[in-house]
Image (cartoon, rainbow, N blue to C red; front, side, top):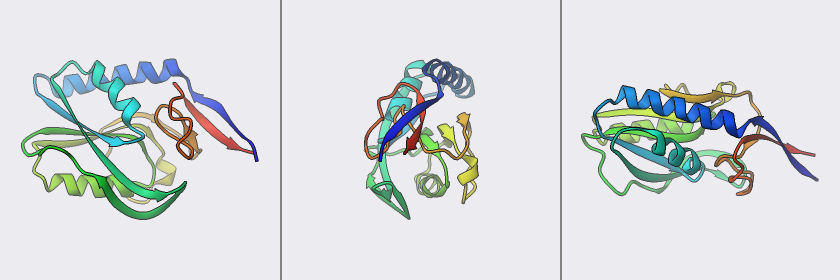
Length: 173
């Protein structure tokens, strides 16, 4: 069985959209400090590129959440790594690589809201609305995409293809 990847969203398109999102986030939080919560591992590439372009004081923290075993979602959500610091009183922006079913983010939003942040919003590079099982309000969306298996820019297939500088469609032949 072979694998190949075709380009869905080019490196230039991704970079331009991240710049636009950073400008909007900078305007929306004008003059305030912002804590970015990077959801590991897939969001690392997106988070770092976004953080570099936000013209505000930015702090970073990381969470690792799992609902997958191999390449299949189990539907059970487990916190693998929790935040290092409190978010009480902070403006918090959760950074995700992709929103599909909405289960993980719904769980995370509830969990983090109970920690009393000043504000809590959600930012994703990719949104796959056709896969939505639970409605989640996404405040900042890079691209809405069809229900394709995508890799690159942090998204992986069995831990491979994360470092591609574009979003690609994974083809398994």
